[in-house]
Length: 367
Image (cartoon, rainbow, N blue to C red):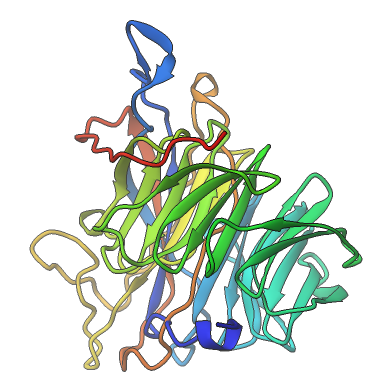
């Protein structure tokens, strides 16, 4: 399977709703009798606001990946061969046109992103000037990409990782635990990745398996990101869910769902510095112009002209620092006739999660 095959599975063209979520760790994170044993991943969230990120009713963006750098949000719009850039309040929307379809994206520094594209191409882009500063040609189709410790970690032909510098020089390779790996993120000394069976793998940086997470309920995972506590966040497109998994892979919780307004999420990103989780979903629109409810109970609809603004929150300083990285997959470009307007939903963490925590047995660390 190559990157062209992967594009067969795409979400329908409809509005992207960006959740900006403040994450607060669970205050009862440690078992009372064993202070070193974590029992729960963090968090509960509440919806705050939403914002529009398209300029025209005629736009039909397909957003697969997202990042947040300071007050700037960046989205890959693959069908329109561009990056969409705006402020975190939805203002100053502008585009960077590209010669290739952009898919996965990672932050290099405060002004630079690296984007994996079709054509076995990685683009290094200055988002301040809107210019492509360099182009890397890879030996195979490139998909998941993550920047860590001055190197790019790139999934090549969905079955191996090439570790390369910013000139494209391959330093080493890392074997993957599964054929069909799509998205990856590097979390300090660990690598977390998702394959096409919607299994999540946590490995050492030499490819040694630490744990595997698989839940039958979640069959359409696309993107992965981590916080500074090592918790793993993924989007499930079919169940309209953001799931958080504990850093040992033993516990998980549904963090955002349809009832929060999340609809068909794809990309996800954790801003380490501000401890904000960004998770674009979609707001569908009926052909007559009436929008479908985006998860509000009772199937409520929103007025076509409704545009709100996001509010960002910060994780308390005593609650961990958060982490980032992108996660995404592919979807079916022929999947729908509905058209929508890109919007973003801001979400603030109100306190420790009190939802029932479910967990599953996972493979132990391999020695």
